[in-house]
Length: 309
Ligand code: IRO
Image (cartoon, rainbow, N blue to C red; front, side, top):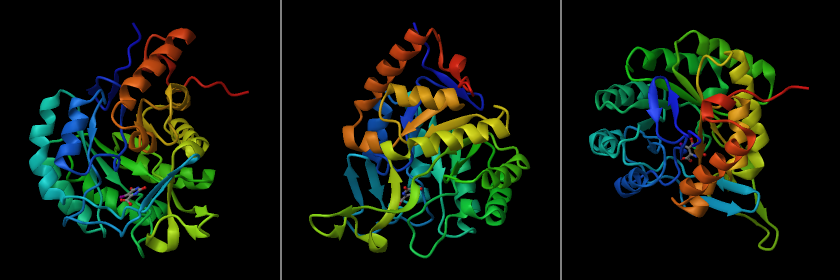
């Protein structure tokens, strides 16, 4: 039997697949449905201090190459998620709370209350691309460092960072230096590729309403960017910081590629939104098939094993 379980920062996940923050995880009903599904964890929507409706619709659009979204952080507010965490922990799989904020000050406020609710892990989202007028924190190493420093003093459960895609080794190195200073327990990359633009030529129009149609790209087309970021940070930390690989996973083979590049677990966003919760059973089956065919007995065995030429 192939072992699809994985361990991140000492926390065991019964399957290495889970939802990406944002995908089918805003409401209590959605989170409970993730609990009942074959997903290996329950990841919450990134939360803010106040509940938010998010950006005007249409704000998500799926197309053959992937998806574009500008949800604008619709969420119940951190107090509601803090109350839900004990209930969600009863499903026998880790609960990962995704913490965001509209300004730097929000992060410690939310981190303190959520940490007190004791999710299994906390993911600090430094990479939301869709709040009009707010640049992604993760693209500014100094502001990233300020946020990381503050939350690191507060969070006692395993703490990770959700990073945006970087496109130059200098940026991997600069962020790597910051991350290396704060005892980060895990990394998750990548968030959506921010500020893409999809056009419908028939309607001669953009496809989502917020920000003139600009939004975060996900799905199939971002896989090489995701793999590159997983690989870059795996190499910078020589495998010592576990990585959740997110971006472009549509099937078991895509997940296998993430594992080879250094991921210890896999999150799915676009394919989960498009296919629904049954995707987890399919992904488990497909990954088990390819691992068995390749002679790997577990997720851990193939982690980081991609060959360079
Ligand atoms: O628009 C969103 O809510 C959103 C967030 I917070 C994020 O981190 N990534 C994304 O693609 N969308």
